[in-house]
Image (cartoon, rainbow, N blue to C red; front, side):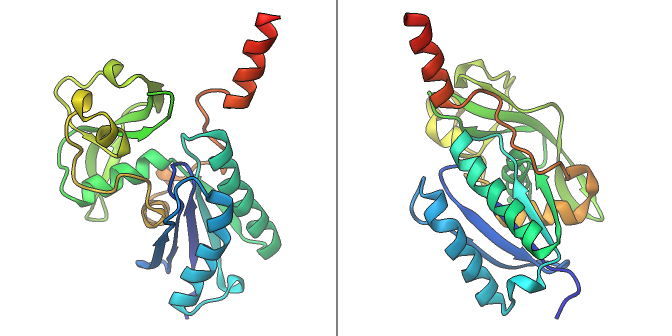
Length: 225
C-alpha cells in the first residue's frame, strides 16, 4: 500500500468525475453517465474507484476538488462532499481550477503552443482562460496566463488560438473544432496537477464568476415590482 493516496473529484461541469492518485499515477478514474445528476452520482463513484483500486476511505491522505469556474449547484455538491470527507477523515482538502484540468488534458493530447480552454457556462456563454505550455519535472503542463472569465463565445480574444474543451464543441461555428483532449474536467488531471506542483493548488472554495441563477431571478423580480 502507498503512503500517499489522493481522492480527486470534479463537479464543475455537467459531468461528474472521480479519480484516485497514489502519488505516482492515477490508479482509478470514473465519469458519471447521467449529466447534471451530481448529488446522485458522486458518492457511488467514490466507492467505485476505491473498490476498483483496492482501497478504503480510511486510506486517503488528501482530497482534491475542482473549484470551477462552474454553476453554483454543481460546485456546491463537489466542494461540500470534499469538505465533509476531509473533516471526517482528518485529511487535507485542497482545490485546483477545473479549467486547468481541461487544459492539462489538451497538453497531454499534444497541444504545444498557446491555446484557450473553455467550459460550458450555460446562458450561451463559456468559462475560459488562456494557457501556455511548459514542463515540470519533464512533464508537459499548462500555464494559465490570466484569471478565468465568463464571456459570450464571440467575445473571446482568440487571435488565431485554438480552443480546448466543451465550450469549443458547443460553439464550433465561433470557436472552431476543439483541440484533442477531454471536453470536461477529468478528476485524474486535478490530482496529477496538485501532485506535480504547488502552483496549481488553490483553497477549496468555489470560483463562481457570477451570481447563482436563483439569486439573479429573485433580483429581476424585485426590480419589476
